[in-house]
Image (cartoon, rainbow, N blue to C red):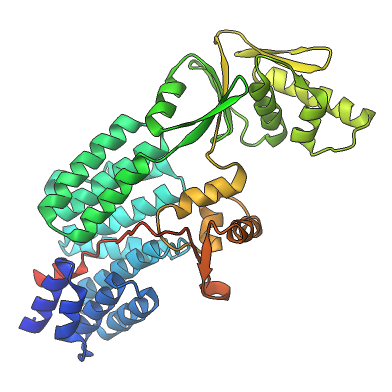
Length: 406
């Protein structure tokens, strides 16, 4: 490898894309194309970066399997950064296997972390944890140790484990300082800001207040009967009952929880569960049927008593009933939570992450855009959505470091 390629790779590893481009901007050989692609990715021009990396992968000959695999890994990270969650995972796994086979363990580990981060984004936490178990961060360079701790923090935040998340971010901060890469430091700082932002709303006895992640964790560990509208479960410290696939029952449970210790009027229950504005005997009969189903579903933790005006939730073991709701209700709140990472998302990627239809996501995005809470750029399939202001999130590409050590 010539000196210009080595110098450009070292510049990229240090977070200096302009310095790298000064050395290879006019070259069209395969290593230079790969480095130019990574430089453009670090500068935020993802379409150009993907084009250059694909060109580089085609330009490397068949004997340069490791270099081609590194290009695929770099392209996969660009896809992750641009929230193209439909990028072919099999190609990344094949590249990871090639790198592992040829002894490039750093880039193989990086490919595994990309797979794990994608799984975390789409909510497959158990699968992500199983993949992490195969990695020993003590054997990795500081940049990858930072990535490892950031993934652990992300999983802990999804699982409402504030103490574990803060500890992982502390280790990530120390590893990022050792790595000396500004982009990594910014990524850790962004994660720390997310940890301190409001996580949910507590609705209890007719009043509301905002909770942080640690307060949510404490609430879920208490003996209160919690109607969790973030995960669509009902829990009381001993038992967790999921109503995620039974939206009518959960709507009834949430309405009863918000009205506790009082009664929830029948008209309110009909409106919240069925969207009924004008009711007749058929609606009231259906309400009785659904209340009976809810009684059977949560019979271990609460009773539902009929009253003159409606129904009342009576916990069996808990002393109080509270509702844990997202900071913003409905799909809109979940969309804002994903856009809060500062990256640009397509509606299809949001639909995949939320487990809902793309049309539902598009309607919610249009509503949020009309209120100025999100903004879009691009057209048709290239359209991306962001939440202003962008907090600044830069991914780490390890291909430059690998090229510099060849």
